[in-house]
Length: 294
Image (cartoon, rainbow, N blue to C red; front, side, top):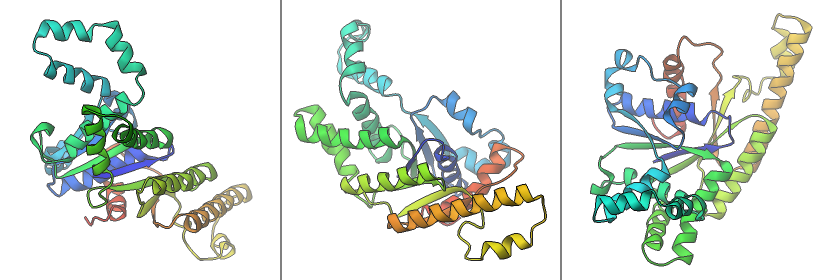
């Protein structure tokens, strides 16, 4: 399982779809998991035309939304003996309020379903070769990880068992990798540094960090005076571009100094004919960052 996390707006969803696509293109049954409504996801990135462009990928790529409330409702349906009783519970104001306000209940339901999808067992319903989780933004993501440990530590009975199972999953580094996604901007870099520190406190390492939407010059050692002496353009345009590159280089140095992980730069693409065109381009850049080769 590969988990992309980080600050909102850094491109986690596009990166997740690009890696999922790279797996599916190789014939690996791949599921991309999201907590966002699929209509919302499709407004960010579209797979329209995939069947025609790459039939193998289309046959092996699945996108699943985990709705924790529906997961809990399905649990009620499975555990209660009659349809009449199920209807009574699901329509109960007490049950509906409990689902909404009980601390950690929706998070544990989400993570348990994620665990099922990631494991080869009957309860998952399907077997996938690869799972990519487009995780929520930093604060919610960290909260979800902590919830499972709290359930394991402070509760007893079935919820404690769920917490223990999820904790075991996220304690086995061989079964998953967490890859923060950042852009080379001050707020995103600072949040990434803090995210990596908090993950380390939870015992979760980050071998790699993706720096998304970067300039090819961000990691170059070539002096900027030499670079911009070759460029044509208005003084204002050159000044703006130079300032942007200086910011990216500074923030990249900050990340490298603060986070003991490999940095993988994903170049920004200035134009593309379709979302699918963009994803194919990103796939070649993202797969190596996840330890995969196309």
